Image (cartoon, rainbow, N blue to C red; front, side, top):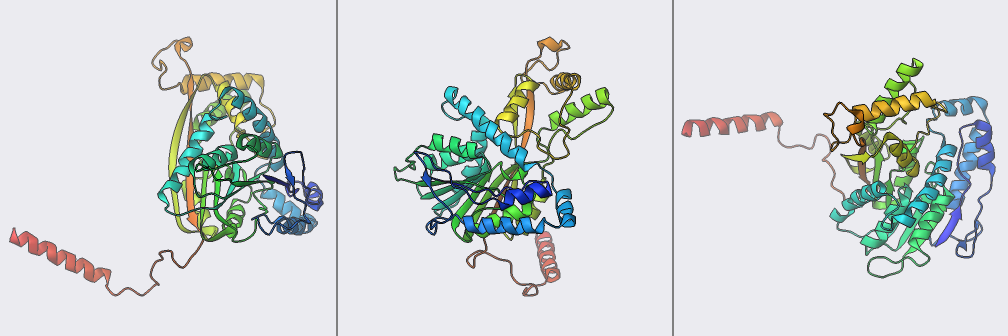
Length: 407
C-alpha cells in the first residue's frame, strides 16, 4: 500500500495554527512503503494532496488576522493535537491487545464496525472505491476485505501516523478481498476537517466513531459529500449524547461532594435531531438516522477508563480540567460501583463486597446519506397535487358512513 503524510492539522492557537499550516506536505518512506511526494502524479488515486495543502494555506492566511483567529478559537471544542496523541497511544495499546486477542484488538470497536457495515448488505450495488475515515479504521478496513467482493481501492485517512501503521500491519503487504482478488490500500495521514480527497472520486465514505471528535462537523461532512460520486454513499456512526451517562452522573456527584462544583468530564456529543440536521447541511439526499444502544459490562470503573484509553475515547475537550484528584476519583469509582452495578450482579445485596462489576451505556447514532443524482426519488414540486386533502377526507368519510348503514 501507499502511505501519504500530510501536515495539515490545524491546532487551536492562532500562531501554532499558522506554523502548522505553513509546513509543506511530507512523504514518509520505509522499506515496505511506497513513497509518494507532492510532485508525483496521483491522478489514478482519489487523493488530492495539493488541494488540501492549498486549503491549509488559505486557512493559515485567514488566521493572520488576530480578531478572526480569536473568533475561530472561541468556536473550538476539541483539542485536535491531544486527539492525535491519544490515537497514537490507542494504536500502541491495540497492537499489544492483538497479541493476546487474535480475532480483533477490541471487541466493542469490532462489533460496532460490524453493525455499521451490516447496512451495506441491504444495498444492491458495488462500492469499488471506499474511504475509511478515522475512528475504528482497523476494524472497518479488515471487515471490508473479509466481507466484500466489490472493493478495489480503500483509502484509510487518519490523524495519527501510528494508527495508520497499525492498520497496515493488520491488513498486510498484499491485501486481498474475500474472493481472493488484490485490493489497493492507501494510507493517508490527514485531518477530517481538511480531507485530502478529490471531488467526485469515491463511491462511499465510511466513518465508524471518528467524526464526533471534529470541531467543524458540518464542514467535515460537506467535504466527505463532495468527495462522493453522484449517487455515492455516506455512511457514518458516532457516539450519541446518552453515551457514558453513568460516568457523567458518578463524576458529577463525586465532584460536587468533594470539591463543591461540577466540571465537564465527558466530551459533548450530538443527539438524534442534530444528526438529521447535519445530513441536510451537507446536502446529502435521502437522509436516514437510527439509534442503537450497547451496554458493556466491566469488572470495575477503572477498567472502563482503561478501555476508553484503548479506544482513544477519553475526554479531549478544550474546557476539560487537566487533572482529577485522587480523593475525587476514588469517590467517583465508589459511587459508580454502588449506583450502576452490572445487571448480572447481586444488585439487591447491601454488602458492597458481594457486588461484582459495573455497566456502561454507549449510544450509537448511525447516519446514512447519498450524493444527489437524477435517478433518486424526489418529492413532487410544491403545488403540483391534483387532489385536495379536504376532498379526500370527505370521500373517506362518505365511504365509512355507507359501510356503517349497510351493516
